[in-house]
Image (cartoon, rainbow, N blue to C red):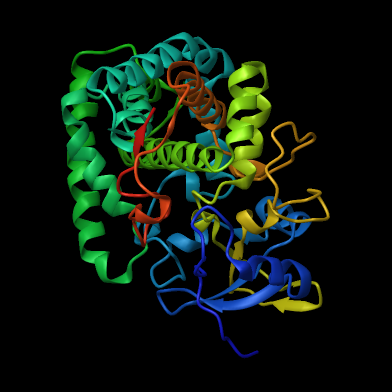
Length: 396
């Protein structure tokens, strides 16, 4: 089959899905494309098929960690993260860490997260317009929350933010930088884990160190991998998600005012903003077929790479009427932004909480919120797993 596409696809508008997605959904639900690495991958785009690939154990996450395996992110090679494990290893690890992310533990963070969002927006107000939404709220909110969860000193934020920025690049030319950044973060987390063992603390990282079940516990490599996952996905995904949500609403003043007038609608609206968001392209969902599988008449051979295209699935007109519209009260809303199956995001509840807190603080404190520059002047970062502008100047 000829390959005439390279993924990720270019988009005319960073807040909208690439036009190629609609064509895939309509005409080619299983399509062969090339990755920036030169590897070939099958893109699966329809909602039902994406759910199937995400849940079917014949499509392996762990296989992408093998030397020479197709991959988008160099970070995946040799990883022992829960993010790239298959059962039974995944089952074991998920059981050990689930208590640290229990619904009760995350709910208990709610008042602190909301207070933090209010404080950050208050600091933006005090500094006077204009202010940078990215550096004033969207970055520090999830980073401070992750720091508190892990017990990481906040003065170290700039260092690990720089490391994770590099580690989530899919630019083929930055492979050496990715490896170096991972090494620096590994050494930092190793020292942090050793310090906590010597002087126990009350935080999630300590809970992971102590996590045990029938004598089983996380080894040091697993602890490091979990630290990568929390610092990378926990910060980058929420930062980019909040920026995309705000920019989407700023384009729709009537929706922005509706949310300001009816804050009780915010939880449902966040689900729709997540569905509509292009912040993450689903680049981390890559899998390898363990055996031959047929899908829509296409034979996916054992060893082939398969990418369930979550952003396309979230636009499937068979599941979401008027998928291109932002319907703040859309229900039901079975979007796949947090994944599906055994790899459904452990931090989904926390991510939702942070988005609600950040948006709520902005709506309450900045009734005249708007961009301080024309939107076309925003400079977008490229080659990252989670897209966002380098700065978002706003006024009110």
